[in-house]
Length: 260
Image (tube, rainbow, N blue to C red):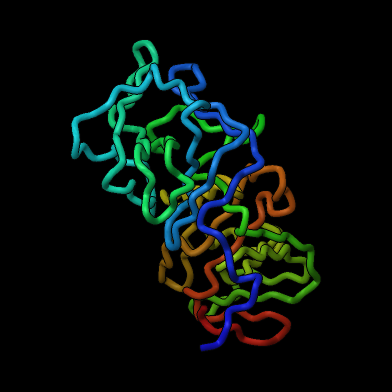
């Protein structure tokens, strides 16, 4: 068996150096500078807080067998079956079955014993340091690099050149194909129409989508842009990116890129 390279040995439970707070009803129900981050393969990461950093007086134990409330768009890992589920109540603000604690040492991750986790969507707000974090926690092993480029990029949809530029901004994100963000001046905006679709990225922000109407055909939700990206990714603001794996022609420096 071939040994995996050292850089691929990523721990599933990571001590986080970040100051993390969870708010409900205007109060920090958890406030910790020593949280743990569970990175379950194929799932979104989850913060676990030491019991001493949680206002346990605001947590009310649910009946055995109670399921945790919907956590929002996933995939989120399910709490272990031995976890005690809690309803969180701060004055008149109630989040039913929105927290769980590993009362006993779990077999898979013993370091999570006596730690509390919260259903992301059920809470009012999450902060890392003094910045609000949306959608889900950031994975320390998930990297995004944004680079200005002079590559020649051409986007062809249904036989029509919809975009062509020599000044794209390239975004490299762990686990995803490179994305090419194109200035609107280099896009046939007359062929694009705003769609109802909007996606949310914990790293980059909120992205409205475009459909393309060309030669009598409409290709739905084929492009997107970030009108107000998180400041770390300011170079892609208001630039247009296309799902190159869904269109018939995506050329970079004269070479046709196959579908990813």
